[in-house]
Amino acid sequence: MPSRGFTLVELLVVMTISAILIAAAVPSFQWMMARNRVADATNLLLSNLEAARMEATRRNNAVTLCRVQDANATPPVCSSAVVGVFDGNDWAAGWVMFEKSGGTDTGAWEPGDTLILRQQSVAAPTNTRVTIHTTIPGGERFAYQPRGTGGTGLASSFAIDHWAPGAPVAIRPVGSIALSGAARCLVMTAAIGSMTVRRPSPSCP
Image (cartoon, rainbow, N blue to C red):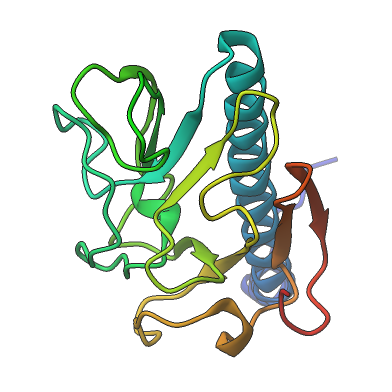
């Protein structure tokens, strides 16, 4: 018995149904990607803050994590300046970790300090991307004391969220930022140096 192929009408019906299914799936996929990127950025920052705390205890010296405009710069420069699409509160631009060596300022880099880590930008500046905003305008430095307790800037928190091209860029405290359902808050306690991750309600503290 000769085989029967698809008619043009049948093919068009299949293509129409496929297009509808794809159109319905794309927003869900984009939302899943946004949540995954926020989760990855949150875990990265949390692990780096925990590493700075452990290094301060292990080295018996102050260790600083600071936001930079260029993670490859030598020497590192802690900066809350705007760079490209990254506003001054946005740590997605990148950061470095270093050990202090006898300086009185536990935040700023000084000659003789020891570089521990360079973290490149966590987001491509031209695409829909993650933002990592601090609660303090100009809060570019967070330092741990030798016992692992908080020092410079640690009575603070971060709002990690997903940003779309065209959204307004400005230096602003986290409480004034409208957060999406994908956002997470990384809250730090200066007295004991602890960190917790929470959902915004509706903003970060």
